[in-house]
Length: 450
Image: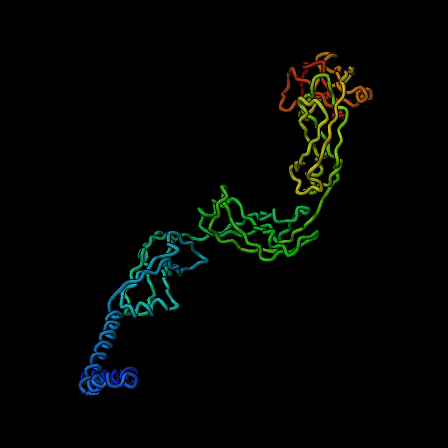
C-alpha cells in the first residue's frame, strides 16, 4: 500500500507540474493560433477540445518525464570508480626519539561506489591517509597504509597499500654553521657583501646515525633578493633558512635545530682609481716603430672586493699591432679583472701612430728572480749570468730617453727545485712604444736552500 501511495503521489505531483508548465501554456497557444487562422483551425480546435486528446498528450509528456528522471536515478545508482592521485601520507610516531625511512610520501587512492556517493566523497575536506607506528621499536616493519574514508558506503583501494619501513633511533651532533650568498648578481655592481655575522656558528643536527655521517656541512642560505635596501651599511635578515649538504652538494633530509637564524649583512662599496695601460702585441711592419699611443680615457674607477683591488696596479688593454703599416684607430672594450664588479669606463678609443725605427743598446741590466720559493736563493754561474745587455727598438725621439732603470730583466723560476738550471731571460720596460730584446737568450743559475 505504501508503494502504491508513493507512486500515486509521484504521478499527482508530476501532473500538477505538467498542467502548470505545459498544458495551460499549450492551451493558450492553441487559442492564439485559433484566433489567427479562423475557420481553418475549427477542426483542430474540436479535436483538441476533446478530453481524451488532452489526456493522451498529458500522459505522453508524463511518460517522457518519467523516463528522463528514471535514467538519472539509474545513472547515479550505478557503481563507478574515481582515482585520487598523489594523496599525502600522514605518519604517527615519536618524532623526538625515532627516524622513519621507507614510507612513501604520497599514494593513489581508488574509490569505488555509486556516483552520487563518489561525488560527496570527493567534496569531503578530509582525504586522510594515515600510518600509525605508535609502539613500534627500532627495526624493519611491514605496515598497512589506510584511507580514512568519509562515507562508509565507499570501498577504496590504496596503492601502495603496504610499506616496509625502517625505524632508527634518533641521535644528535653539533655542526659548524657556514653560509652561502644567493643571487649575488642582483646586488648593485658598485656594492659588495663585505661581512656576514650570524647569531650562532653552531647548530644541532638530528637524525639516524648513517644520515649524520653523510652531513658534510650546514649552511645558512642568505638571499640577496631579500635585502630591503641596497646601500652601504648593515642590514639584519630574519629567519634565514638552514640546509644540510653532503660532500657532493646534495641536500640531506635531517632535522636542524634551530632551522632558521638571524644574520647581519654588512654592505660596502670599495673602489680604486687605476690607470689604463696599453700593451701592444706583435711587431709592426719592418723599419717602423710606434711613435705615439693616445687613448681617450687614461684612468678608470673600479669597484670590487678589497682583495682584488689590492692586487691591481693598472687595467691592462692589449692591442694587436702585428703588421701595422700606418696610423690606426682602435675601438676596444675594457675587460673586468677577476673580482671587479663595476668600472666607470667600459669602452675606449686608442690611436697608434708610426715613424721610422732605430735601435739603442743598453748595458749592465741586472737579472732578478721572480716566483722563487721563499726557502731558496739563486746564484749566477758566472758574471755573464747575472748582467745582460738589451737592445731597445723604437722611434729615435722615444728611445733616446730610455735608461737602464726603465728596463727590467728577470727569470721566472716558478716550480724550480734546487740544482743547476738553464733559464730563459725575459725583458720588460716602462714604455709600451719601445720593443726590448735581450742579447742573451738564456743564463745558467744554481738554486740552493737558504
